[in-house]
Image (cartoon, rainbow, N blue to C red; front, side, top):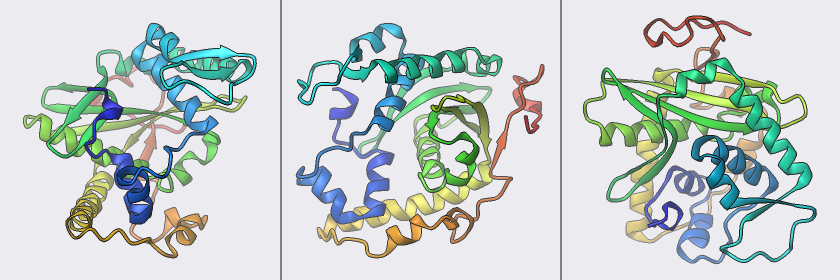
Length: 272
């Protein structure tokens, strides 16, 4: 079965439920709201596809066109304007040219993990010496603000979900190292690799399990009520610095591109 056709719940669906249970129901159960589609999502998916699935798969899924068609068949390639295609290629080359990316060469790409109820698709995943390694590729409109907005986009929750699924699939894993590979999609095309604090992910997992229990209860009693006033809070520019988030500089650290950056047990961190 195609991953996207699999009805099991993923982290994206959980985030949508957390935002508004009523919207989740309309989108996933009643199917009266179409899946979100935007240039930003298309860009990120295209870069992700090329880097983790290869050029052949990318060529099957995407095509460069002078002008995007308003109506596209379901099985037709996703269209990228020539301008968007060039930006995608530039971002891909930017990532591929980084020496630090050797950290992830040994890892499997597009790893699918499933349970009876849940599913996850990890960009990079591997296990060595009972240590689980997870890396997720992110494209961002503003690299310099990535750390400030990371919680707003639910990326900590997403990585916590991936880690939880990996724990269930690989009982021998004793600890984890989790990373975001971040590339700016604007013309400056900045790049960085960040390691996420495991203590932060531990806190996220507590909240994630609460969310899953709330989701299961809502499904059981079939009471999908809209959430009120939450969007107003999340739109606040200070949201990531308050509430349970408690974002600090210790939560995410930029990895220096240094000669011994790949020494996983003695990794050094610096601001580039």
